[in-house]
Amino acid sequence: ITYNAVISACEKAQRWDLALVLYERLQLRRLQADTYTCNAAISACEKGGRWTAALSVLGSMPRLRLAPDVFTRSAAISACGPAAQWPLALALLRSSPERLILPNVVGCNAAASACEKGGPWPFAVSLLRFMCVARIKPDSVSCNAAISACENDGQWQAASALLASMPEFHASPTVVSCSSAISACEK
Image (cartoon, rainbow, N blue to C red; front, side, top):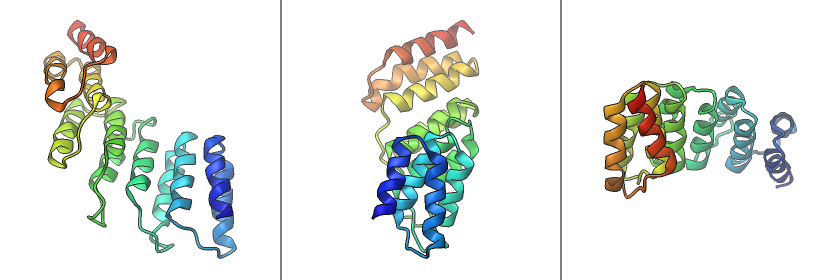
């Protein structure tokens, strides 16, 4: 419990490096990590912009006989977003060996954000469809990421169509939605 609390504090203090040292020390002392430990370490790496370290912690979980939960996957996907690692974000979103863990809106939004930052716009749009099929309600963040991905690629028709379809998702257009769609039309 002490390690979990300190690793979690490192996350909040944005000390990913110290969180990883503690995570490794816990294992060297043959203390049992749990899913919460891994989630805190992954989140600390995410906050520090260290997506490879976050995925390394995720990859260590089977060796520790731990199963990732929805929070684990969401944190790992979020770590991929700022680095524009959209293929990894989508792979993490779609791969759930447990098959009992469905992604949530946070994980989907993180993957959409990764697509927005460098992925092809059709992936961001198909992610909205994926969310609907998985019965995950897209929100304005989901839609904004898809509209922005269209904007980045000059796809004004797709951006306009997404803006018009936001009410179907029960998502309200925001200033970001409208300005991204307008910007797409200008390109």
